[in-house]
Image (cartoon, rainbow, N blue to C red; front, side, top):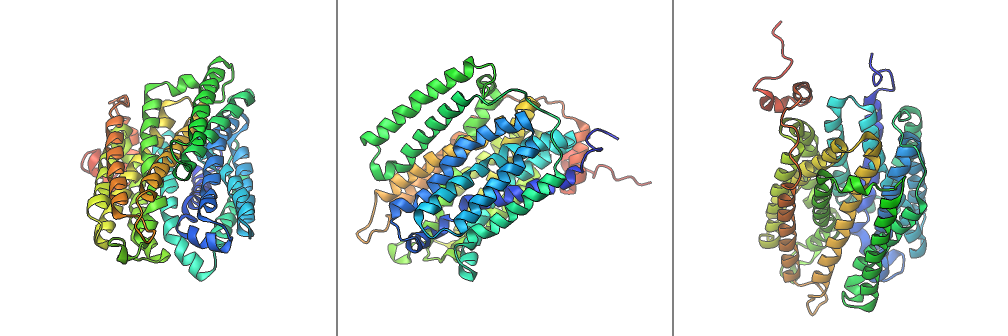
Amino acid sequence: MTAVESRTSYRATYVVLAVGTSAYSLLQSLVSPVLPLLQTDLHTDQATITWVLTAYLLSASVFTPIIGRVGDMVGKGRVLVAVLAVLAVGSALAAVSTSIGLMIVARAIQGVGGGVIPLAFGIIRDEFPREKVPGAVGTVAALLAVGGGAGLVLAGPIVNALDYHWLFWIPGIMVAGTAVATHFVVPQSPVRSPGKVNWAAAILLSAWLVALLLAISEAPSWGWTSLSVIGLLVAAVVMAVAWARVELRSDQPLIDMRMLRAPAVWSTNLVAFLFGAGLYTVFAFLPEFLQTPRSAGYGFGASVTESGLIVLPMAVTMFVFGQLSGPLSIRFGARAVLIAGSAVSVAPFAILAFAHSQVWEISVAMTLMGTGFGLAFSAMSNIIVDVVPSHQTGVASGMNANIRTIGGSVGAAVVASIVTTQLRSDGLPKESGYVVSFAMLALILLFAALAGLLIPIGNPDRDEHQIEQAALAHPALAIVAGGTVVGDDPE
């Protein structure tokens, strides 16, 4: 019996991680389709209600890499319980909020849940048999993206059947149960990175991320050339340089800058940034586009529920191809899968830009988008987990997820600036704003495919045992393992 087999079953650990990841990812997008409703119920204005999203984004950006580092130091399982508990508290607080101030505070607390991402990937690498790691990482990465899509789908039915408070109660209950299950099921990691948190680096990291995301989040309303935005961007650059210097000089860096300079890491992070711009922009603006009245000359006048159903193919295909990404990565290499997913993802944005007058056209775009994003997100995570030392898995995967978040912030802010500055006389955005935005995102995903070519090619000599395991787990892929289902024995 191996060391892994003598510990808690990795299958039970996998279930716990999957549920926790799904609950966290739902919170990324559940509120997006119902922001107008929240604005009315919380008696606030459009500029203030956007902080329901911004506060969550800022908090997740700050805490994700920090928690990844702490998990590597003191044990990922123990830290995961604490993070899930904080996420449950934030969800409960949001559920009982009756004022915009309390809601924003609750969302900032929920952002701490971003630490689930690096902790989950780190636990998978520590606890799973080696041949199972790519598939498990791929599935968890797919759940992160699928949860976001599912949030767009589920928001309408939840609000119609209950009310907006249950947008937070349901994930909160899931998270609380997962925290208890984690305590009893997930074993303490045997892989530790001794030391202490470099608090100077943590403060500088937090400061430049907050300055950057605050600038790009508020630029559409303040103006890209305003002194406030320019000042924040300059401050972000200065503090980022200071942070990098502190990290390079530290014996115990929060983020190992030498690790980030590794070709496979920085190139994968570049792709993550570009993909984040595409995914989070879809979450933020596609429901609004679909809900635009037909009298505007575009849009479908869809309700919150109807717009969610139109987006449903993206969530389904993202999960399916996220599952297939692991075995495909074993057979062909994660780099090839990432490039393929990037290339496929160009088409849906082109369709949204130039062929969006019929529901079936949007459905085709959503199907292609889920396919490309499912393949690429899982492959990205596998590349990062595979190329960094095991004691840096948490912080490296956390930073990769964080860069996706930052990319999403930049993409959403730029699209908001384009869409909101081209308004009709009735106050609705002009169709041309969406056309330009979706076309720009198609180019961004094309750049992501080209950036994938910069990722170093892995060892071409594949582990045949891993290929066999992939074929057994996914018989539909047996053909790529040699034309027959591996393991079929006529005797």
